[in-house]
Length: 255
Length: 356
Image (cartoon, rainbow over all chains, first blue to last red; front, side, top):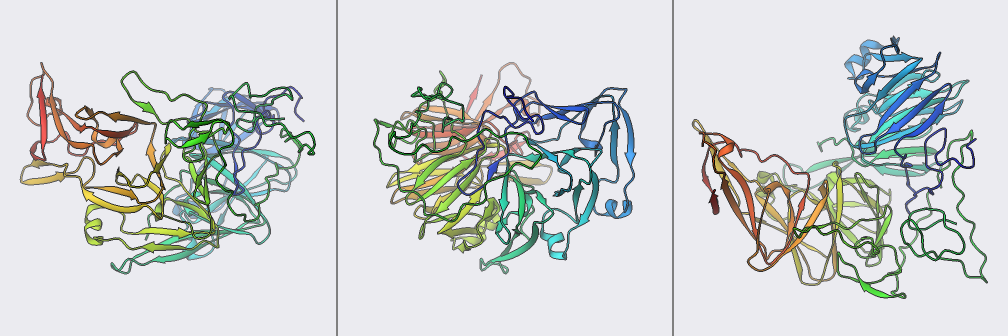
């Protein structure tokens, strides 16, 4: 519970004195986390620094740990212990272009992360019993209580034209809550779809979704009279659940 | 209660928001006051997002009921009590930032600013890589290049628009396919670069020349054409010669027979200035965003003094685009490297030169 005088949420960093920005079409803009906002999880804190390419600086408490893809690490104190998470299906991951190694850092000590593009940090406190699917390489860090796996995207057309590779990261919480920090390119928007409600997305814009949300690629022929024209692929996402998109999408070229 | 402009808490007695100056709308005494939006609080449950509102017809053009004035950006006559210009989204209460050198910065725009386009509306969302979210009324349409499409309602159909000179477009690297969507329904666009969306409200009979790949979307009543820029240079390396087009081989020209809207996206920050007849300015060719058709352009070489002129060295010249008024020109602060600039140039289009 936040204190009455708090300006930002302790759990996710969202400003408490500014209302949610929701477009008329139903997209909620990710809360713009103020520079130097501190977020608490377990015995640790995460401070979000900067606004254009923000950094997540973690002050790990003793016994706490986080895991991450090693290329997003910006700096760390020497005393922070490092190890490698054991992952099943390593060969499959390597072939799929996913990170073969997921690194783990354990407290006490400070360690910081950032990604290589203008964007926003999305802080998602995960409550027990949640399952979240995330675009590969989009997660910045996750607390060690959260189970990490990956799910194969079903359907050859989804893999080839979905613009997000063969796998998605899946984060599952069982008994204990956890914290997941994502980085989205540009601005990030979230929408809650009702059961059976659908929306068509540029596949490269997909960032995260509840595991209850389904995603299928559909094609549309764009006739030009030249060489059979072009084909546009869009992802149909269907509720129930949340879906998050980034406005600076990873563009996959029209086939 | 909260300011509808910026979300800052305001007290009952305040007439204007202390943070942004937006007029505070108090509920009429007779009417039941709407519940003030409660600030979000942390809870064990995930933050609830309002579910998608049912499809609704776009609201009519806001009636200019308050004090009248003109939007400094698009010139539209507007009700100054509104926070943003309904034609272009520019913040009305901010005086435009003009540099002593004469460049005017694209006016600030509040997140979620709403534009009125006929019976349709456009909400511009986000500040780093903004999204243009259009609610098209029945019969209203827009066209766009298909790779800028971010999301759309399932009921809105996307079709191709016929373009002349398809083969030449392919050769020039221009998008071969221009797509269009017709309302009713919602559709949203964004580009994959941090920058700004530039709403250009076109008056009847007005034209504007836009550098290729800058278009986000245009209302279907705006005519689209393209022309050769005539800006080029040839480089030679050994037996290989190559022609380069620093502002693109072609430029888009948009013409509005009736009032229309053009939404452009450019990188970084955008600056605009009005050139007087005969007035010139040198700009980086790849920084150009748009210009009035009355503005003439050609290449300009500058050779700095005191530098030994080395063969094939970039240091013996600067390459500029020389723009001559009258008319508006706009530039972006993020621009690409000019391919071939540093190489040995053998021929070029009409150009002027200065040797210091």
